[in-house]
Amino acid sequence: MDYMNRLVVIILNWNGADDTIACIDSLRQQKTVPSIIVVDNDSSDDSLARLQQYKKHHSKSDLRLIKNTRNSGFAGGINVGLLHALGEGFEYIGILNPDATAAKMWSTELIKELDKNPEYGLATGLLLSRDGKTIDSTGDFYSMWGLAFPRGRGQPRSQASKKAEPVFGATGGSVVFRASVFEKIGLFDERFFMYYEDVDISFRAQLAGFRVRYTPRAIAYHKQGASSQKVPGLTVYNTFKNLPLLAYKNLPTGLLWSVLPRFWLAYWLFYFNAIRRGNGWAATKGIGASLRLLPYCIAYRHKNRRARIVTVKYIRSLIYNGLPPVESGLQRLIHPFKSRRSKA
Image (cartoon, rainbow, N blue to C red; front, side):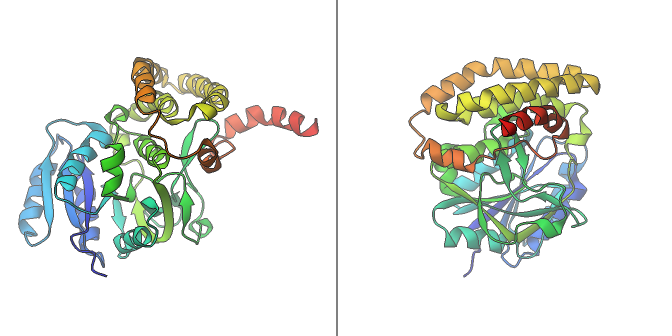
């Protein structure tokens, strides 16, 4: 089947023309070549000029370049591209991180999964480290501790799931959506700015009845942290701001009171650890920003309480029971209590 004109892929550039051009090149070499929208998120370097020059030299490619007038983060920058894509009537809309490159069958395999499975609204693939040796993500988990994390991160590539299967969420760095998902639930929440905005939109999609599918055949390679490392404290600030926002917005009331006690224990332990590591000010600012967003979360829950069409039991079946494997310190802290319960 010819997928041309059914799929557009959005790339968000910020001060990283080298990576973005490599990303575009990988999409132009796909078996199923998508249309491409590049949004420059108000870069302060020569990115825009270099991308304009690239577009001029590849005038036959279906490539559009949009200049964002401010840096509105990942969520806001992608939304600029989404508005253009939705206005042009594409059936499928993909997102690929600017510091990622896609293997030749990436777009074909993601579209194929959605074509074969009409109950799914999002498809994500096997996102590997740049050298291809370890897993960056095979989708996202959300845990009963209120913590979100990439499925399989850091494990050897050989341990990646070999079968297509449902997952809780799709990584925002390598995903294809049905356009109808955005038409029903809206765009990315720009209050997240960056970090966990992809978990948020996957959570909202699940609540609205759009399932998320992983396929190991859609492979991409990611240079992790290329953007966040440019701004000290950015990751810490947005983590402390966004984790409570994610829980308060999306968790059904039937699960909220089960998750919150665990979440707040983990959250404050993370805060003390941030202080110990010299990131206390960024964490404190993130907590303050999160508190200011609490009225928004309450209003959002009230407005959207009837939008959920799936059961609490279904959402619970998607949620990971334990702690993220990388949280070894928290694992050690709760281990004595788990041992006592198992002996009781």
